[in-house]
Amino acid sequence: MTGDVMRVTLTRRMEERAARRRAAIVDALEEQGVAAAIEGEAVRTSAPGLKARWMADLSLREAGRSRA
Image (tube, rainbow, N blue to C red; front, side, top):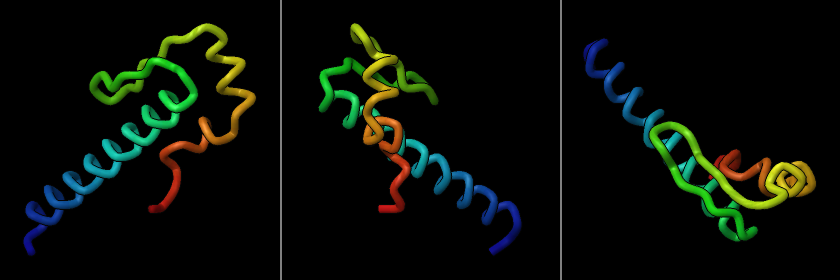
């Protein structure tokens, strides 16, 4: 495998991993009743009391960080 091919392959894998992580975050937020959407590389959220909910619930902060 040449350097360029390896770089492209690693970049694709990292992008796929980041997309899975964003999707996991959106799923966790929606389970908690928080509207969430992926916009580019960001997860946008909207809900009353969102900051308090985020800080109080470790599962939301940890969403998408698992190795699975």
